Length: 390
Ligand code: ADP
Image: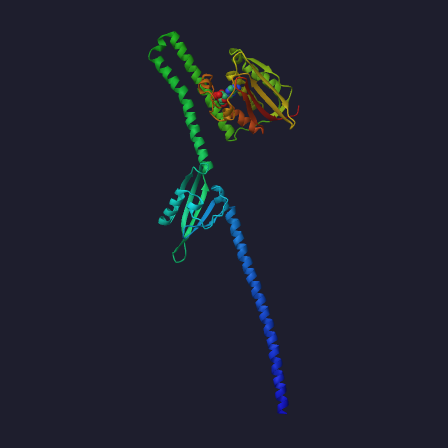
């Protein structure tokens, strides 16, 4: 009996052993598979986090630069590379190797010494006159050890350009106002000092004073117009405008000015209707025809003409046969206060703002304005307007 039982027990034990082993192996395999799945997920998660970080850094408007504890670049986002016009891999390079900007290298040393530097302005003449604002701080770990540095770059170039334009504008306006004002003051003082007792001299001086007050008045009107146009406060009252009769009206208004210089005014414009603000288009035509009279050839001809373009717009031109505009000044004449010949413009009572006003008005109608000129032959100004029904 015993041997039989022993055999059965051993067989049971062996069976149990194999059963346990099989079960154990199955469980082990399952755990290995679970572990592998977990690791894969972990990798996926960290890859996703890295990719998300990359997307986040690259979508920032500010340039971002991370340096390691050896002052080598650890990370530079897309905006940073764009600011410095770089396409190469920067990781592992020093600031000097990557950018060759001494001032930035100095700044990094300062941040290391002071812990942080805020609103540091960096001018980069070597990168097309770029202005940057840098905020930087040292990064430390929990034990207070220095791990690296973070630098954030904000592009100030546009802001600086606007600031410069504003300063130039204020300087120009002050100059333009001061010139007639000091003339008026001088002649008034001379009159008070006794010149008023000589009727002939007094008459001449008063005429000069009147001319200069008119100039001041014109300047202030133009400045107000520019300011209203630039701030978008001037609302257009669009309506159907017959252009040919409008040109006739402008010719009538400027008739005596043309006559003084013996200039013939010719209206070649075919019947056409614009969808525009009649007063503003009047201002555009008056400025262009007035310029053509002022700067055109004495005894010459000023012609206004135009056509409907294939694109369905109206293209109008104002042409003179004067001395013309040099090619390098052709685009600049639309800038505020830009004059080809300053003395001539002032002599003619010009404010230097006329073409700038023209440009704003035309553009606010969705049109374009440009000029063509040949020295010694004449100048033609063109502008487009949306066509109306009529
Ligand atoms: P301004 O008040 O000086 O006339 P504008 O803005 O109207 O100012 O014109 C700017 C400059 O463009 C003028 O000072 C002049 O030098 C030049 N200009 C404008 N129109 C003509 C033209 N038809 N022929 C030659 N030069 C012109």
